[in-house]
Length: 461
Ligand code: ADP
Ligand code: MG
Image 1 (cartoon, rainbow, N blue to C red):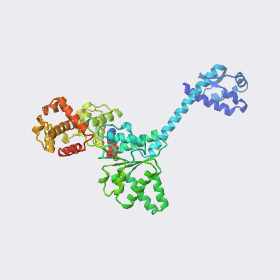
Image 2 (image 1 turned 135 degrees about the vertical axis):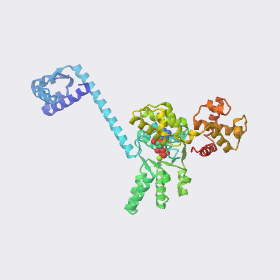
Image 3 (image 1 turned 90 degrees about the vertical axis):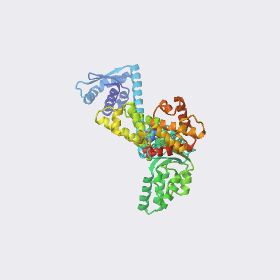
Image 4 (image 1 turned 60 degrees about the horizontal axis):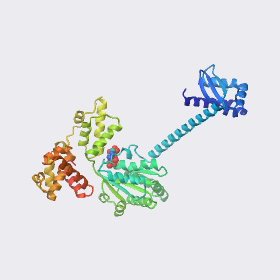
């Protein structure tokens, strides 16, 4: 029996003693502390001689038989010792243990509450900030979401996150919910998909014939909360009533000073039939965009997946996946999961060969050459490929050159050495050109447009 088991056993024995012996003995029983249980002998210590003497004289037989019953040992007996200091010491220790146990229980309770809150807020446990890989493509959106999580109903209300499917909108939005529940448990959070919201509204209207009382119940459900996370607003119906209801929900939340977070696969203006009033409300806070991650971030995401799932894979295999799934993190994850499942079922290690064979990426990027990229970029900027490869320094040519370098790196993941060679430049010049575009992308919207159009022409978007 270890110390904790001994204390637990003793608690049980003591409880039986207290239950079976007359009330007048209880003060003596409470003074007993257990010191050991060995070969059927239960040694207990008291700091009061009278306790030892009285119990020994009048009750030891009964105590022994209780112990026999509980321990299942025939010759078990209780040995009572007087030792003031030992009794004090034991008492101190057992209080420490009790305190620790109480703390552990509290922690467990808190954890249970947290899980309950998370599930009632309708959140996926994976979608936390800790699991979100931050890259250039999502840093702004990530920082905005974190700022909202740290200070809801502050400067950024509503927060509107938009971007194509599979880029992490739902993940970021739910991360706000998890963060709040963990750090600010007094606040209530509700995550709802827009189609669920609509269905709820419709079924509620049908059931209740729009009675005022029931409508107000519906309203309360979506407004008696501190943070609402409304996912995929592009699915909003253009029906007048739904629109009016959403309008009202939004205004009530805003008036009450509640935080609203919305996601969409496009900007509000592009959501058909969304009323002007709602468009302007959605745009009144902060709008942030998620774009596809670059190669480094994609690689980081698959590395993290491998690490979190305790999966060993060749670095080249991970790079291959990161190279070929560039537009959508969900697909990137899907490819990784497929490889892992195959490797597990067949007890094979994850190698580059396996990944190639399994994913059979015939993606366009495989066939992308520096020539092709430069040719399309040159034609976008209306310059000649020969100018790009020359030392010409006009503004137009130099942007086209930097852009070609940037895209060669992003789309083929070749070394700057190779890229430099192709453009008749040094490795450091290629690196510099790449960095230039990377930095300018933060502020110059037309550069992102250029990248999008060139990628479309290369059929990689
Ligand atoms: P969306 O809502 O934009 O369609 P999701 O949030 O559902 O995309 O993301 C798709 C998948 O990709 C999810 O499993 C999510 O966890 C993962 N994901 C997206 N972005 C990241 C990221 N930056 N780091 C880690 N995982 C990500
Ligand atoms: Mg989503």
